[in-house]
Image (cartoon, rainbow, N blue to C red):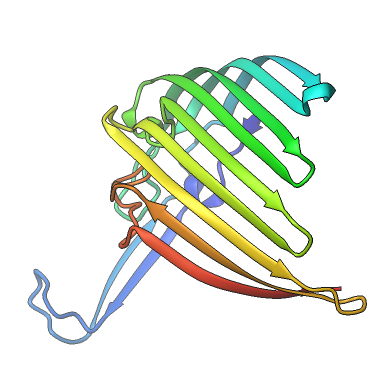
Length: 225
């Protein structure tokens, strides 16, 4: 597969307009400061990926069990790894990355009201630039348990991502979804609650991708018809 560079990557035309400056190297306290960048054509190549995958799927109806295993190798060439912003004038499609890994997915239904889902993955990344590794955890685990009653449903999940970016970053979080619905004629109103807990306050992939709190809550309401 290929991905062609978009207009922002190939021919950017930036204009930055800042108002109400409070502190700057020009000593201005009022007015406007303009900064612009215009590039005629960077001549970027298409990003290319060649993917090889070997998979195995097995269904055990007697145990209500599904197993899906795969190993793969992805070869990415002519990647655009430079930051696309007003401070970057020169952008090149000169990065390569090879990804090798294995994944396993397990789905088990112990009862008709419950199912358990688990995914395990291991990835090795070889690249010319470390920035391409920030979203590729070496090891990952995701587990979910869902219970579906007559009018209630719940989902409990656990996420474990190891060795993100620098080999030392361990990201873990848990999530809980609850939902209650009613049947009123052909309408199904429902309410739900969500809770996400992060075990350690660490970034996800990039140092700027960090929640300000380790706990996130919100409520939902909807109507199906």
